[in-house]
Length: 279
Image 1 (cartoon, rainbow, N blue to C red):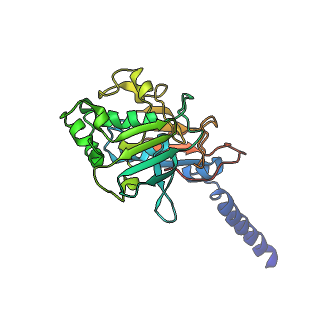
Image 2 (cartoon, helix red, strand yellow):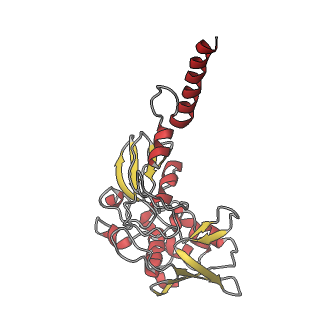
Image 3 (tube, rainbow, N blue to C red):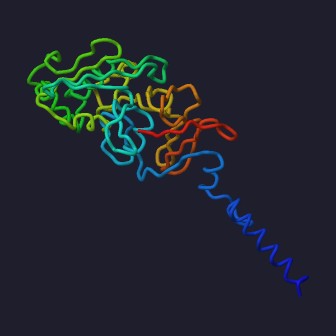
């Protein structure tokens, strides 16, 4: 009896070990196990993105991709859910609660190699407020002094808007009234800086339909770079190590699945990724 039962027990024990270690006896590798093995992060975006311009997107699908491509000034601490540094390494508010001063982190760069500057922040927000862009969420900027009047065309003088770049890394915002939750608004896509100079290379930066967000054209500053966008099939983002991501998760690789955003952890197979998070 022992001689007949022992092989059976060994077989099932071996199969259980294989199932635990490799996803099951004789079963093909699942996307999840492949992702774990190759350090590929992938998740569904739900619907085909209509645009990857953070200043005009409104859909949930686009909202899942934008954080991979564009850094906000401020993010949320994953433990406390309080405002935490991102593109801005620190900030302070005046005693009257009206003037917010943001100090950009050193080394922040666009994917074309240019430094991200305070003037980029001013130019980006001016773009959102330019009436011809017809940005759906421009009204979120109305808490900034003079922003509503500029956006509604009551004045063409942008100097009346409470935005200023004092040097390459110091950006100030003057509000119309105290708004304690102001840093939390900056996480939203419309507040994320873009490289207006790079957009202008493909057409009017304040007009819809500018093809600047296509792969090979888009200039971004987030932890990932857009590598491919096949309509109704997949969006591919990657970081080959050339992007300075600070304390973000570093990505190195690509992915493809229908309506899925995927990314590969730095180092690839046998590599060592940098732990962190995407804003």
